Length: 318
Ligand SMILES: Cc1cc2nc3c(=O)[nH]c(=O)nc-3n(C[C@H](O)[C@H](O)[C@H](O)COP(=O)(O)OP(=O)(O)OC[C@H]3O[C@@H](n4cnc5c(N)ncnc54)[C@H](O)[C@@H]3O)c2cc1C
Image 1 (cartoon, rainbow, N blue to C red):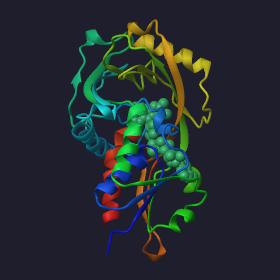
Image 2: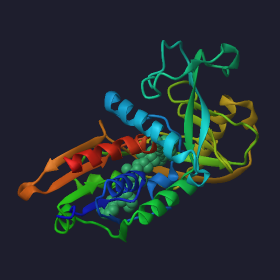
Image 3: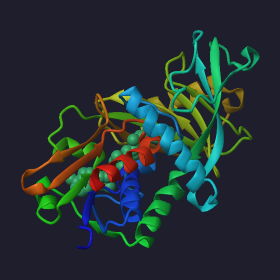
Image 4: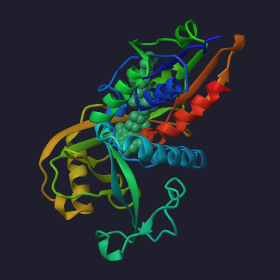
């Protein structure tokens, strides 16, 4: 018997990564999505490998570690992927025994020399990460999915039964859309606004996710530097706000003096799909059908993407 086709819902980083691994595992895959790149939340991400706003810590660490290895082995060797290595400085206003993301990074980090900390910080750690330029990467994933034989259809799914009517295995990677599609009220948006500025020679990424300039980050990419950010819970506004822009500029200048003057190239807003814990589980349905959920990755959809995709692939095989 030939393997049964799988229907993936969603063409963000979760759906495309999952579709690719399923195709590589020999399953025929069709993907339905309401929005395609570049019109997904994933396209709005900064995007750095860093496990932010996602729980539970133990599963997140395992998914993040798996994804980091996958990015290094499969994506960094190909510059067309838009992925490249970056050094990250993660800053703290108080002394910290070890960074909370230590396990995700495989224990690979070192404490920053206090002389290198900006004003207002008492501790900081340096680690090796990966920066993912979404303007290239999302198209790269789409092309990879198609090259492996995946079929893509733009479609707004109003009810999960529409999907279950055509496939025995359905993977729900609809991000914030799962609020309605899976009737999940625990899923909510955490709004993120970013600026893109002209490169100014700063090469490393800088983060503050709990100190005096939280949420502030500087992420140099290939052709620009992303400055962030905001983390506004239950805020559905997708237009940029002038007050947030001013706040982002203030925080960037506080994190590094080179950002006292910047040339703004663009700005954007995305709604992170946050829930108390990432939902990655299989629902067994009557008649042997399988509905697997893979959504709610918060501020870490890229960071967790390949680890989660691998676990979904294992659930489908089993
Ligand atoms: C400003 C900002 C910065 C970020 N920075 C980072 C970062 O540095 N690192 C990191 O790892 N993560 C980061 N994130 C988080 C990351 O962007 C998300 O976790 C990730 O994009 C979620 O991906 P997804 O594929 O689950 O959802 P999405 O990208 O939202 O994709 C969902 C897909 O499902 C489709 N869909 C939804 N409902 C339906 C429906 N009813 N029928 C059919 N299709 C449907 C959509 O059209 C879309 O194709 C950031 C997010 C923001 C906003």
